[in-house]
Length: 478
Ligand code: BG6
Image (cartoon, rainbow, N blue to C red):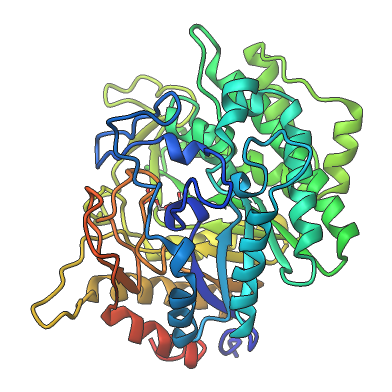
């Protein structure tokens, strides 16, 4: 007989990040973060990274949806939906505005005290990411981001400060959001948001990225170890962007290419969970002539600071081919990415693949045997406010319903240990990838457009009532 239903204490909730909803970018002593220097783009037009905050640009994260002053109103709505948990991040720059100060900013610490108290008032468990694309910009300008080893200590100090301060309020932590995005070292946005790196002329991008990633993985392991000393009940996870890379066909070249391409994702999870640099990475670095520096002490720390659970985002899958159309071998790395003919895509080209979430849960669990936590999933879509003020987002409900069905199969039929599900952007917020407001994920609509105009008024969408019922029935009524 198949196991029936999700665990009773399943963590249903929603996910956001500080820079995408808080606003208040210069309030309460906050410093400039890397999100504060990114302009708005759109599908196919990348966000521009400016040299500091400059006149004449629109920076969508500066105000975002003003959660900074409206969080009580918003948390009340989350409570009304029945959230058991709420995933957000701490803006590093509220605590250490520049990142290298000796003492933290009390006003920033107080803000999160109040925020967590407000969640706990409704029995909503905070799930906290320490670094979600929002490190201090000062650390980029003056230290070169995570390419610099000094960043390990700055991050550990920040993490220690908040873990000590909130040790009785927060149990679930994650270190670096989607740490593996940067594996695509040709993508400026990914490496900047993950590691605060602006490449120099002539620099080997991939080598620099791997060095930065190793620094982050060491920093993460140190924080996991320290966190367990601060409070042994802490559950400290990693956070991976999980985009399965399917082989295009049963052609062995396609299959092998997908194995190689997946290593770019596995690398991060493998170090976080197994506590050592995998053999395939060492071989790759050697073959490429990369000199990635880490000490025997670092290796020991990696072993001591392995994560308790794996948090991951899942939105879409992708397909790799091992050969080009003319039959020649595809490029190294991700090979040739091709559209999946079996799937449809959203307006931003993200292909919709509900079975992929079951696949992701299975391959992650088979590889690591650690509890899993889906900390992001959802559909970015344009919503329309009807004349009567309602928002009929049936497409969002359909997306989530199909994904939850597959998630349940992973638990009931495949025996995966899954602790929770927090759909992304439970309230509309600024898109990370494009800086748009109109790429909406929320159950709660926020009146604001891509140019920053709007009243910021909140409105419940049809999906709000649907998700409330899903939580009430622990996923039985979809
Ligand atoms: C993940 C990030 O990449 O996906 C979020 O952790 C992000 O910060 C989300 O917002 C959705 O991506 P986008 O580009 O649609 O905002």
